[in-house]
Length: 231
Image 1 (spheres, rainbow, N blue to C red):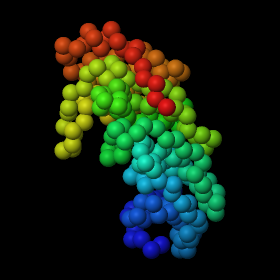
Image 2 (tube, rainbow, N blue to C red):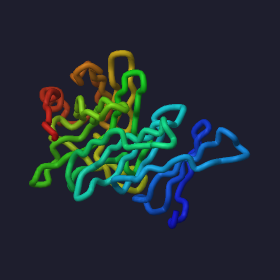
Image 3 (cartoon, helix red, strand yellow):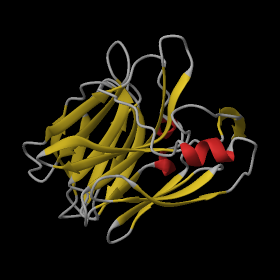
């Protein structure tokens, strides 16, 4: 490659190399014979990705998050099961230039559950007037066959409350989802404002716990079923 190395990731007997130019290919090095490492394949990236991480222990599936051309977030699933022919197996673009995706700067907020094939990404969307309309989590069905947005878990009562909250020197909303976890039948999402349990089947709220009480609590409870249609 003509670009300096940015990062290297070792998963099992595979080494993935990211270049400093984030639009450069990802190279896969086969370490089956440690004494003779071989660059087995490379896949050209289709966006400028900020986050690349594995989705399984074998390291043959990679998730990439980045800015889509023009606007929005691009989510891509790269399949390296065949090292000689790696490919972008699936992708999804959502949001616009005003959308906020905290996972681009805080990849620890990404959650993937292989058992249910559910991918959870925090997101915040604003209307054309700049007013917040949604802050919470997007739940995708994610595997080699495709990426499909299944549910949205709202932590903002339809954008009707959002206090700024400092996090690692940057400003986010106190309803920004920081962690997620899947159980046998539920998705659990946690923000500084709220802990919520939602049905894995349809995304409907099962229960919630207010972590930062405020004057808007009754309004939130009365409007907990608010939804936002995001395409």
